Image 1 (tube, rainbow, N blue to C red):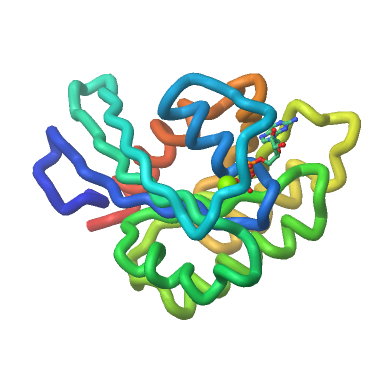
Image 2: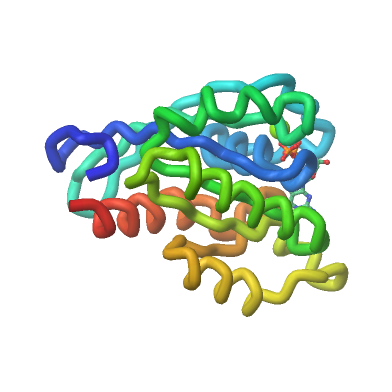
Length: 178
Ligand code: GDP
Ligand code: MG
């Protein structure tokens, strides 16, 4: 299991990576507090939050979440956060092809420098902005499949698929590890 503990109480170190502005902090805020704040502040460096959920089989999962800043000037700090992480959530914005390219950069970076058994999720956020979509669902699915990643599209604004992201990804991560 991703936390290395017994099957009943998992502790999962999770890092969020992706371009600035894709909605990483909003995803965490929605998951941890059930809120969406459209005026949320830009993350400086990184921030830490934790949230415990109960799965159907009464297993509890405590997520220790490192929400990183996407800006270039903090890029050198990223290894501090992803090195100890069991799982990584790499986020892009479905209205931004640039952010999808940046997500692919992070996947390669983790494949090269992350823990060899890190389990990754690819997340296309802002799925509520369908009229502005520029990254096809299929493109996300195919890239994730090719790279052995979990894939989901979410909206931190409407809460669509936010709980599913954490719940289904932990199931996926557990099934991938020995
Ligand atoms: P971060 O830099 O990746 O942490 O991005 P933030 O969480 O700070 O969000 C950046 C901007 O995107 C903010 O203005 C949010 O209100 C907006 N945003 C975040 N998630 C969503 C979403 O799911 N839908 C829409 N429409 N806007 C979002
Ligand atoms: Mg942020």
